[in-house]
Length: 159
Image (tube, rainbow, N blue to C red; front, side, top):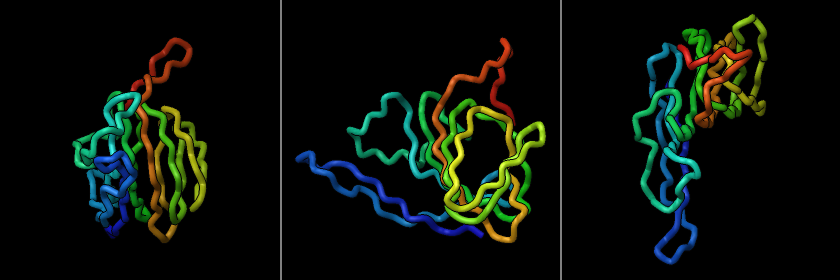
């Protein structure tokens, strides 16, 4: 499965003019979850973000999220990919680029998403299930957030 994405990153020249600093093709790589491949396009480690350097932060070792930062990741979900029920301490913005996928919530609610759909995931327990016949590609931006508190109960990241 692994396929490529093009990653373009902008920055500034010595005179402060906008320039393209990175223009490359990257291969998505298999991760720890069977039936999925991914690549990190960019990360940040602070708020507000410092756009003054040209350091490529995509190679930073990160888990699902990055404390006090952001992770921009592209993931391919093959049909029948392994389940991963989880919650992150982040707010996640997702855009389905191609294919279709189901987002299952812990109580059984399912949202079927297809290319062009967007999702805002707000610290809920969820799982991605591809029941289709084609790989589904999703771009995620995960932004660090406080753990969810409901009725005085702290709901930490899991899975």
